Image (cartoon, rainbow, N blue to C red; front, side, top):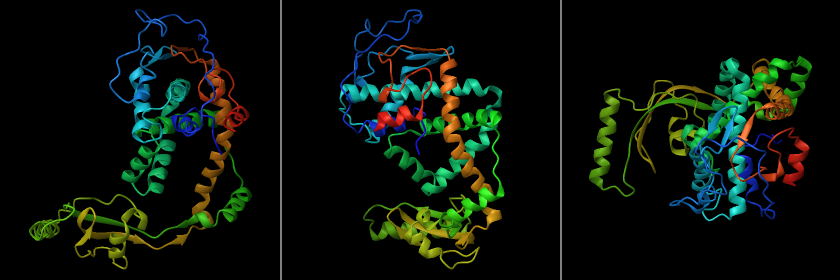
Length: 357
């Protein structure tokens, strides 16, 4: 199920499709020009020394918007587009209409973040546990932080942008919960437990310490022997280079290292292993077998799942109200973001789905 939060991730998916004919651009409702600011029509196209994608915002003013007195710098918008180009989600030579649509939606994501941040105010601290939990869930599902960052890059999203999106969502949840506190009966949770039996299996995993030495792709015998000696010295001295970083599944640890630790008891070490990344030696700190969560163990996770389902609908309504009440000045040449969603006023799931279809 989609949400209607205008994030860069949504628009980048839509940008893969053939864009509609350019709309007639009408001026945004009268705004007070910034001191010394030049309107888009008056400003010449800025010199461009990067991907063609970024040339499409070259004549946008700086800042590109002001949200309740807080400016949105053009360089912040450009960083979002650069991440999309580097991730291959947007072509380097993307056409102007598609590029401008991507830029407009990236801008709206930043505007939404500022609107929600102001609305939650001093209660923003209440969103931190939800943000931490969602980050941990994503990183865990990805098999570790490095894999998570790699996935983001492939999606054309920077770490900063993803954290901002999750922060906005968590803060919206705080606002929604203040108005309509979440409740779930045991009967609802047991029904969900039965439906999601397969997804409630906890995979086998280990916690390990590691000593690693990089190797050239085709090391000489002398280089290999030298690396092996350094690994042995580090292990003998107890200089493990990597502390335990939570439970690591076979996917996160890799085939070679997982096979080596299988069956070892806490405190035991593997032999020296060789992978495409170099030489490794692991020490098992803890291990767990695959098992299914009991209802009592799964209850918090099931409640959180039902709560997220509720948030999908209520967050959309809450964000639409906040956008309608916020004082936003946009200095971009677009009066609407990609997909035809209005920049102010109610945003409904029906409108979003209709445009996506």
